[in-house]
Length: 613
Image (cartoon, rainbow, N blue to C red; front, top):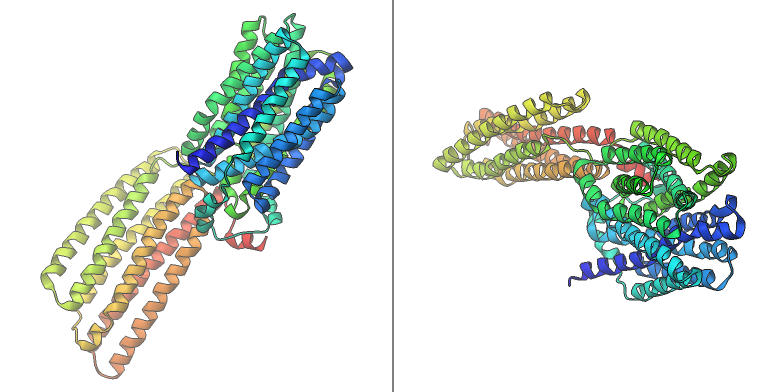
């Protein structure tokens, strides 16, 4: 087994074990607390769990950043195990209230660290799938625990149920001790993104960016709704004359569907974007909560639970993906921790809000679900308006890449053609010039197809105009190359002019590198607008190098003319040829500027602002 695969399996195993221990509580927590305190304070343990889990989500980001992922994972499992011992040894309801402080601390550290570690392994390209894996493992554990909790409670009793929690979390400690450090796997992303703000800067990026901020708000409110489902659904099932086993069954079905479908939706989001799938998931969840009180039988309750599980899976692993998309890799661990703080503090908000709604409705569970669903629907509408897509897709994007690759082939041949011109190899010049012309015609065909696709689609007009300008800028390079060749063929080459060959060839080589960098820039635009903006600065630097080489050639030609070592017509043609090469690099820089504008439209922040944070 590869080292990366082993590291991934161990982390996911820890998640399943910890999730299983928490999943038991999703069935028995409010039932056991209600027996000791009554129905209104039954959500009190969820409040203590949520406050401390959210706080240590953020702490996990800093611990992982400074001490490493393995140390953070071990610390989290030890804290969680301590909490389960408190739950096992003390009497209800004090055991749940105090024990869930440590359980919240431990789960916050474990799950946030797992997100960071798996993100190290899978990288930016699969950022949503990263969260799909960790949340799927977590909620598979929740589902297992919810079902086992209801079954053990009915078959053996409360104490044996709590023993299961302690055993599962104890085993998680042993697996965490065997885990591997993953921090080194994120080095590739760090090299692609040079800007590295301080930790405070990472948090400022998140809260000042409309897309990441709206994702934080939506995640918080979705967790509010989830905590109310956690606390109130078992009570609702019992109020319908069913026992704890059926409450566990409903919770388990919701969690199984949730965990099983998350990898699909998260992988789909990595290919098709974040906005649509997450907005749809939030809206479906809101509708299902509003519909839940109208159920007439347990099978109908299960049907709603199944739909809730699907809706959870649609938004849950996708909402954190914009944080990963927009955060510099050097501080992504802290950014992920902050996201989880904002999201999981919804447990506390939900516990408070759910208790208040229960009090206002005098124990009517139906109105609690309807009010929660309405609140979530408003949140989804807000999110859909303010969130800007951070994993954009365009139906013609691959053709843009193909067009640019064709221009890159022209530059590759141009480099060899210039050498042939300077060496007087006429037949080779003619052959290569014909190849360049054929490639130029191919680029024109691709351009015509692109223009048709751009203007026959349903994208906003501004986006279509951006890509039209981008294609036009890139296409100019082919014309400049052909004219450059014509100019060089009019030159009379003596020994003095031939000394310019290496510099002119270097200009073309640098321009060819700019075409490859622009291809990389385009690929990154679809993966992360923030990374695409960062690469545009490298293209600016390449254009400056071409400009410096051009100045070197022009000064040398001027000197040769003044010394009478080259005729004026040849000098003018050489000067015009190098100007055309430099113009090609300018076209690539202008194309990069257009990519920068497109990236800004998708929530990117300028690298210079990131460095200043």
